Length: 434
Image (cartoon, rainbow, N blue to C red; front, side):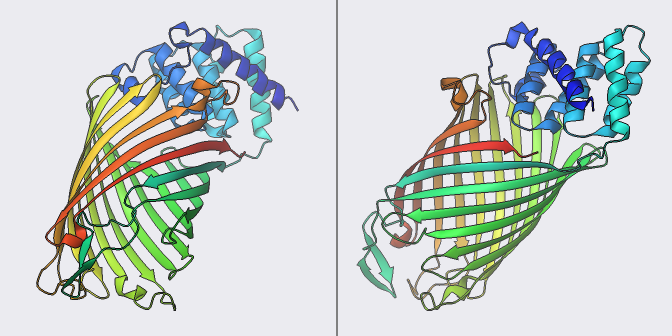
C-alpha cells in the first residue's frame, strides 16, 4: 500500500545525495578502471553506482555501494541509497539486513525510522521477483572493400591450375539483432543468466551473408576464492538463404582474477561441435562439420585512470569430417590500447594469427600444405547519444559505435594473399523490462 511512496522517498534521498557530489555532476563517464585507481573516493564511487544503475547493471551498483558502506559505516545516506537499489531489484534478504542495522542507530530521524518500518512491513507480505529481464537491441551496416577475400593478384589455384579470381570485392551488409536476457541471483555470490538472441543479416550484392540466426546461452556467474568463474553453454542455429543450415554447440568456462589494483588476468577453455545440413545448393556442406577446442589467456593493465592495455594469447584446434583443407591449428596473439575518455571510449587493437593446416587440399593445390598468417588491426569508438543530444537520450542508454578494420593475409598459396578493409556503423540500446 505504501510501497510506491517508500520508493519515492528513497529515490529522492539517493537523488539528493548524488546531486551533492559536485565534483562529478557533469555526467562524465566513470569507468571501473578509475574506481580501481581511487577506490575510497566517495564522489567518484557514487557517480559510478548511479551510472551503472541507469543501464541496468544493478549487480555492479550494489557491489559499489556495499563497499562504500563498509568504508563509511556512519553515512546514513549511503545506507539509504543501497537500500533503495535493493528494494528496486527485489532483494529482501539484503534489504532486511540493512534495515536491522539502521534500526539500531540512534541518529536516525523520525521520518527515516518510519520509512524503514514501512519497508519492513511491506517486505514481509511481498513475493520477491527473482528474475531481472533486459532487452538489447541493435542495428548497423558494414561496408567492405574485399568481402570475398579476393587475392592481391586476382588469381588463384584451382585443382593445381592458376585461374582468375572472379568474385566481386566491394559489398555492404546490413544487420539487426535483438536479445532478451534473464538473470537471477543464486545465493550471495552467484547468478544465473539466460539469453536468447536473434540476428538477421542481408548482403546487398551477393547472398553469402543473407541469413537469420538464433542463439541460446545459459551461463553461471560465481566465485571460488579470489577467482570469478563463468561456465556456459551456447546453442545456435543459422538459416542461410541460399546455403545449408548450420548448427553449433559450445561448452566452456571462463575465469578472472585481479592482482593488486592495476593487473587483472583472464583465462578460458571452450569445446565446440559445428554441423551443417546438406541441401541442393551445397552438396559438400557436411565436409566442414568439425569438433574444436580453444584455450585463451589474457592480461589487462591499468596504466592511468584513462589508459589501459590488454594482451591476449590463444590456441585452437579444429578437426573436420573431411580433413583436406579443413583441419588446422591456430596460434594467436593480440595487443590492445584502450582510452576511457570522459567524452568517448576508444579501443585500438591488433592481432596476428598463425594457421597451420594438417592435410593437403587437392581441390586447390596438391603440391603444398597450406600455411598462412593473418594480421588484423581495428579502431573502435563508442559514444552515448545522450552526450550529444540529451533530449533524445536523457539516460544515456543509446550508443553509437564506429569501427574500422584492416586485414592483411600472407600465405604460401596465392589464393590466400589478400588485403581487406571494412567500416562499420551500428547503434545499440539496453532496455529494462521489469
